[in-house]
Image 1: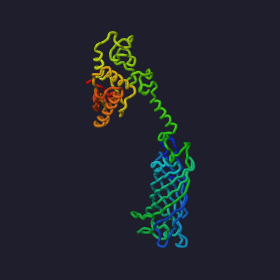
Image 2: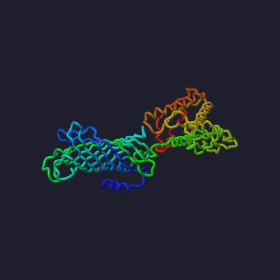
Image 3: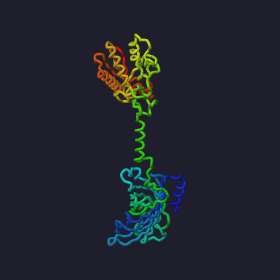
Image 4: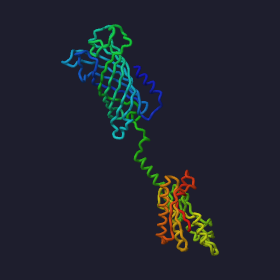
Length: 426
């Protein structure tokens, strides 16, 4: 019983868990003494004659300790061997590994599990044929292993099929008891430095009874956070969809939009804020002169006609107040910056003697060659849009300049500003 006491002392030192840790086991079935046997003595291939009782404690879903007491007897193979009978008892303790959890059995079944154990203990053999009667029991120490296949009947009971090889150390007599198993004197309780061995197997069927108030035992427990339920996945997908909503239709999703109620048609930046390029208090989408300051009474245009209006537009374009922005790794203009293309095309139509270069840029994420190609695709997309708006291709050119290294590449907002197409009047 010292094995069970040791397990109890370990078990009580651990904090409360989300699963049951204790189980009681009872098994019965076959045994087979492999050797040594006296020449001429044989045992059945499967001898019915073994029973054991055990208790197991699991530290977590993967590792535990098991102690058991085993009893049985070996007998001769009928009609082919002289008769013999050897009774035995053993006490073993083994470390247990829950291979079913380690190998993720739960991915294809929630009924089967596999436990493997290694350890040792002590035992005693009492051979009826033993010729030496100086002591009553042949005491041995035992190295033992086990492989248990479990089938879950309910949360409280499982069926167990087990195979257990055992190696006896310092076994004095053969399993049948008719022959002395090691050199040296046959009398006396001790034979120092002599370690003759004996090998035997058991194969059993049994039941595991799980103790505790939790729903699952550690053999079958799966941490809830490891696998999301359908409802949890649906909620997460719903949250993502809500984040991507664009309530005001300005091309900036609500979770990034600093002005979520932008009027329809308003020109905004990458944060969803309405643009006022000339700073005159009239937003660009209401300003008839978006790059020339003017009062709201004249729709953002100056009261007196300004002769160098073309110079203002050229400065706005060349100083990159007008840009077309793109999403990460995309050559499709974002919706909120399409109006920049309209402004440029209208300016070119009113000034037929002006030519324009379309310049594409990318952020610093990705390789240099890849960013050159991506920036050129962006420039080509805006170039094509201007041609579709009625601008002659002879007045336009485009080029990809690759990475814009002037922005802070560690800032997501700054990288967004780098994903753009700008213009230069030639």
